[in-house]
Length: 164
Image (cartoon, rainbow, N blue to C red; front, side, top):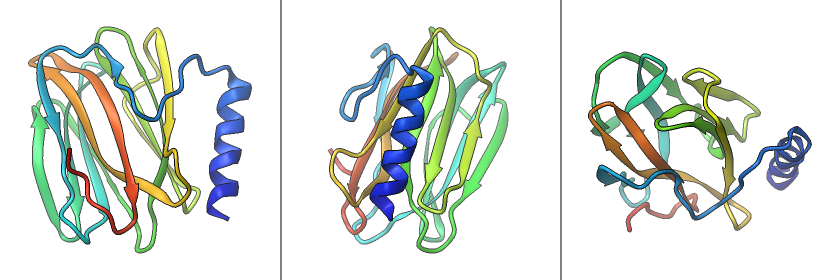
């Protein structure tokens, strides 16, 4: 069932004409302070907190188990939180950017989606794992004081880790 949901999502992206697709590359310009989140071994993503200021993503923080990890970027702006249910995983993503990251959308195995930020930007991207059964474990990216410049989704097996 997991693969069918992912394939359906990719088909929708293809029909909509999403111009870029990648599972390993950064979306946006690699400039500024580099970061890479990490999920402790044996833990899975249970929440995402994104800060948005003036239509730009400025910060991101991930929750694993009952603990929130480090904040990457800045806590300026409005916090938008997304908590995952037990046995729910993020299996695909979408986003938009121009000079800064404007929107990230996360899709889950429970057929839910969470939109962070406005549908704005010249460039769109979609992302998912290369291998069946992998889920979102974290993000890598680049940010400056004004906002996120680039982001990359990190996919690993359910019991894997997110370290580079």
